[in-house]
Length: 576
Image 1 (cartoon, rainbow, N blue to C red):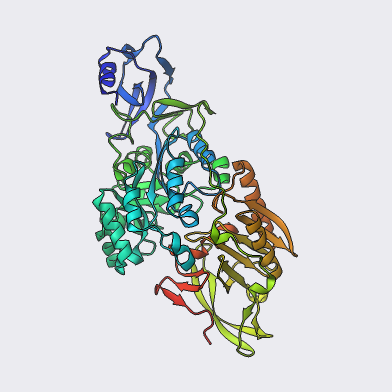
Image 2: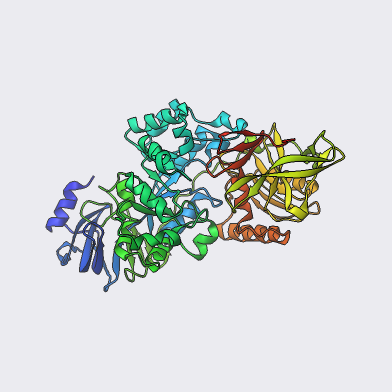
């Protein structure tokens, strides 16, 4: 570290490398906007901040006259999933363009396809990038028996926690903790022993259950859906993360907290994952910050929610989160405190964006493109999706009911039996759903998807490695699944036995290697094709990809059947 150089620049003995001169500085520590301030940068760090810093100018100092523009700290996304459709380097480029200089990402996406080696690959990918990227290690809760072979052990966790770009344990589900699951509690204890973070996932937890969850050492939750959720988490000493991304958008509802006299220093704005289309059309943390300000949150408090607050939560406030001496030189220059449009972005003391143009490029990793065993299936036939039943005439079954695009509930339906098979019933919006792995498959029924024909299949599923398909006709279900396998992973839409839309995702079956613009266009086409089948869900692919997760209530699917997350137990498909 260049301590002596920083001291000498601040004293005026040697020149700075960069001087940001004559701007308005948002001081997140004091809660002030300081007019006519300058920032002197030496190497990767800020040497000094003040009103008259011309004494730091030398013959090689790059002086940027801000002419009254506003300096805010580099933006931080403290909870996201970087591996969401796009290759990593394209997402990093979008982050730079939109003023995000630090990211904490879950590392779960490659874990189920490849196990520990997938996590290690991700940790290597995020190193030596133009911005700072950290990871949390996934605890790997899964409902899929065949996916458990890649679940990390406690010895794996100990090794991974020693990595310098790992900040802790990823989102841990509250049900497992309060039910005393030994593996979960052991993972939490080991992480705390390493003095690292334990991130929480407390969807639906309230009262004594939330308190019990907090008592385990979990320090945050990103599952608040209203003001009451946020207040309760803050009162328990947790950091309440407010999502405004492509999985959930709660900022508008939770922004009402601004009028309730509640301290916001433990509130953090996060994305929880964004699609390529959002990056291209709206932005990243700059857009989320702008929305918060537009919704009436005080600009300084809103800026703290994407800078100082997350840096304190991550235990990194000594190096990031504010513009002050010794901190990393992560600075975003915007026209005004209420107009969050990056003009300049400085990351680690380097100008990485200048008037909208990137001056550095992200490092392109060596991506894994071997097909995971979970989606390396044998040829699937339409008959593989037959639901055999020995009962006569009619049968009562459990149906996955899409209560919302993400949340499911159990629905008991009486279905006709024809030729010893349970068929779909389009008049009641009941079609088939299946999860398949190499060795096993389960076929059930789902209500609320809306399609009257065709099928959509994907390997980009949550918390498992396999393929999920939803369809009105078995021939299209088989065709879509076979195409996903042929592509080495991806999304495929079939109608009349023909593939009519697709997105190859050969990186672990979860990431495409296409440019983000083309990925966005293909995803939009997939959505339009499924809508033409009758689907009215805002993101049809997302709604089926999460059917395997143990993180969202409450009736889910695996290759061995249905799972009831309320009771934390298997649920029989056929009742009587």
